[in-house]
Length: 481
Image 1: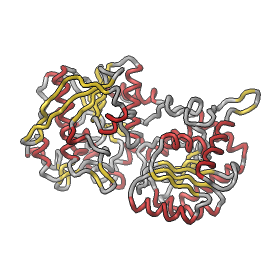
Image 2: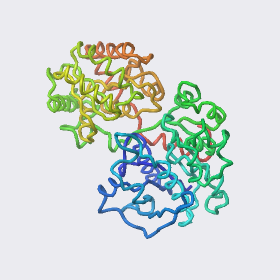
Image 3: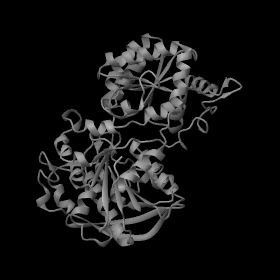
Image 4: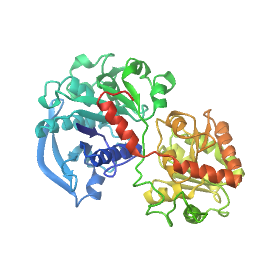
């Protein structure tokens, strides 16, 4: 079976969030299984900088149609993965400081950028004669590919046996563009129709994938059910309900080579979940907490509960109810570390509230890999007050490091966190409901025996990618899971 993974970002080459972790790790899993797998991803400016000594030009250049004009595509690969990783390069579209946009907003030509990306992949497969069995597409940036396979490329020899799988990682991001985008796609006016690519008068890349894909997956079973409702469907619930029989939920995993406290190079002392002569090896976690307190200049000692949030500063991640709850949390004599960047007004609010609680609140605007690893290990509780969460990777990583999640009961959070055993769940999207989860966790923390059991139970959970990768393979072959 020849599998093509197509994504706008993939770790370690490019990353803004969990999508990159999923696509990069899935490729490594398949290659480790001895499967013939390929990754197609744009060649961004930062990728060139980070891998400048490893990127290799394979000598292929193609003209890609974009409406009435042609744009030049160059193809690169990388040392040690020359037959499995293909970078799509175009200086005009991808040689930029960011992947999707700046703090002001999305790049205005994202429609052109990702039409070009989608068609480049299909043209490269034709050029190289790669007979793909499964085209595994991810999120709206690749959403036109399933529909292209059903229309413009249906007669291409290399795609005669190709099936498309489209993975919805977050339905809130859809790739919505004005009607003028249709000319750029090459589809023809007939597909600008409510049964196809049109939604509320616009071209919708995600809808194109939903109507065109042979298989639709989401990143948890719960989210697969939630997106069929008006509350979580973001205007696409009716379209999705027509494809109910084709929608499958497969829970994400995490890369245990990257996220393992027993081997983590960013920790002052590694640790595990075993006993040696009745002495716990979790002492390394305590050492991480000491280091985190020191780096953040937090007051109080290691006995004070330390709560951590790592993620986008956005309403989806629940940053609004987190901010509302900070004064009450601070009154409970806890330390709080918040790491993230995102919407400008939330950043301003965080800066403001940080000044009010400077002794026990640390806010880091941005993302640092080494600091994030230390925070996962050195915290006692991990905060995920999400409005909605398709899967969530933060809670999986936190449990791996023995850090107890406090999460809203939604999407993948409800599937992965066992309330009262490996974490604490709350129901309503409100600061009050969130604080009920925080209070329950602080009560458990005060019971050292109970807390130790929860830490160990959380670290025993297996969220490695092997299980998820095998589920995808079964779905590729048409087997029910």
